[in-house]
Image 1 (cartoon, chains in turn green, orange):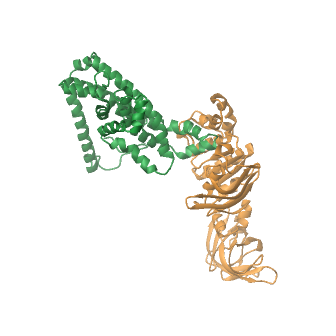
Image 2 (cartoon, each protein chain N blue to C red):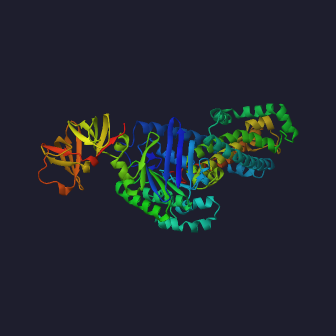
Image 3 (tube, rainbow over the protein chains, first blue to last red):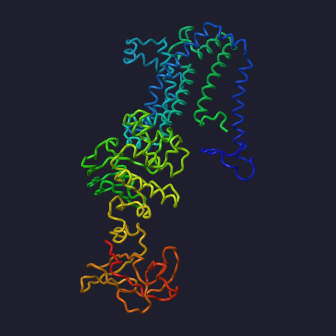
Length: 278
Length: 347
C-alpha cells in the first residue's frame, strides 16, 4: 500500500497513520480473496506436471480441440464485434421506446446459467423459425452451432462493454464534429470510435475469453463428440469422465494461461497502458 | 448577413422565444445574459445542434433553419473547446478539411494560415490533453476557422482563463476576427469582455432577447431593470412620477425631487450613471439636486468611488482630478442629477 489513489493519478498522502480500520479491513479481505484464487491455481499446478502439459500438444484429440477452439472462438469474436459495436452505440446514444427493456434483455445471457442458453437453443430449433433455419443448412452438431452457443454467452459482455465505452465519450465531441462538416456516420468513425477503442477492444477480449470457456450450452445443444465438436472445455470434461484428472488439469492450465493473458491485456488497456498500475 | 427571425426553441421545460436578430458581415456581436438565460441553447440552435420550433435563420440570404449542422457553414467553439483528445493539435485543426474529403497531407498544409493567425504553430504536434486553457481556446478557434465558415459562434470562449489572460485572449479574438473578416457571435456574461470585443451586444434574459445595440447604448439606456443590473448599473432607484409643465416629468425619490426627460406616470424605476453625477456643497442653489450624506470615499485607481445615503444609496464616480480636499465622509452634500445622466427603465 503506497498511498491514496485518485482517477487522475496519485494524491499526496493524508496526514495521520497509514494503517487504519478501513485500510486494514479492505486490504485484508482483498488479500484473502487473492489467496483463495491463487490456492486453486497452485493446487492445479501441483496436481499435474510439466510432462503432462507438454504431452497435450502431442495428443491428436487435444490438438483438434485446440484448433476447433481457436477457429470457433475467432469466428465468434468476429460476429460479436459486428453486433456489439453498433448495438452498444445504439444503447448508449439513442433513447427509444423500450430502451430500459432492451438494456435489461442485453444483460440476460450474463445472469442466465449457461446451460439454460443451451436448453433454450435446443427448444428454439423445434419451433417453426428454428426448423426454417435448419432447412437453410444449419446443423446442431457443427462449427456453426458451437459459434452460436459461444455468441449467445459472449455477446452480452461485449455489448455491455461497448455501451460503457461509448457512454464515456463526451457526446458534445460528436456534436462539434457535426458542425465541422461531418455526417453522423463520419462523426462516429472519426471521433467516437477511436476514443472508445480501448473499451471496445477490452469488451471484445472479454467476449473472446467467455467464448473460449463456454461449456454448458455446448453439452446440451451441440454434444461432446471427440474430434468433431470437442473444444477445450469439452476436453476437460471428457478427460475427467475417463478419470484422467491430471490431463484435464493440464488442459485447464492452458486455458488459465490464455485467460490470464487476455485479462492482463484488458487491464493494460483500461489502466492507461501501465503494466503495474503504479 | 445573418438574419434570425422569430426564432423559438425548447429544451425540456425551458423556452427561448421569438428571437429577432441581424448581424452584419464582419460584425462582432456579443450575446450577454445571466447563467440559465438560454445563450448556449440559442447558439446550438443557430448551428443546428438544437432543432428550432419556429422562425428562420438565414445566412447570406439562404434559409438554413432546417439544414444539417455540416451544411450551414457555421464554426462553433463550445465552452469546453471540444478538442478531440485522440488527435494532436494539427489533426484537430485539420479536422474540418478531412471531414470534407481533403487528404491528410493537403489538410495539414492548408491549416498553416490558421495556426499562424492563432499563434499555435509551435503546438501542432502536441496532444490537446496537456494544453493550457488559453492554448485550447486558440486551437479550437483555429479549427473552427479552418472550415472557412460564414459565421463563428464562441460559447464563453475565455471563461476558463484567469482575469489578466482573459483581456489578452479577448484582444486576440478581436484581432483574429478582423483578420478573417468573419461575422461572430460571442456568448458571455461579462460586460468587461463585451466592452473589449463587441461592435454590438444583445442581452438575453429568461429566453428572450431583451435589448440589442452598442455597449454604450446598453449602458446609457438599458431597457429594464434586468438589463441595468446585468450591466452592473450602480444606481437603480424606485420613484414616483408627477407631470411637469415643460414636457418633462418630476420624479420624487431618495427624499428629493428631480426632473427626468419624457412623460411618465405612477411608480417607476430609474437609473443614473455614477460618472455623470455631480457633487456640490450642501445647500448649493442648483437644479436637480438631492441632499445626501456622504458615507464612504474610496480611491479605485481610475476614479473616486463615493457612496451617499439619502433614503436610497447613491453612488458617484469622480475623476481623481475632480476631488479636492473638501470631500469627507459624515458630511451632507447636494448630489446633482443632470438630465442626460438619468434614464427611466421600462416596467
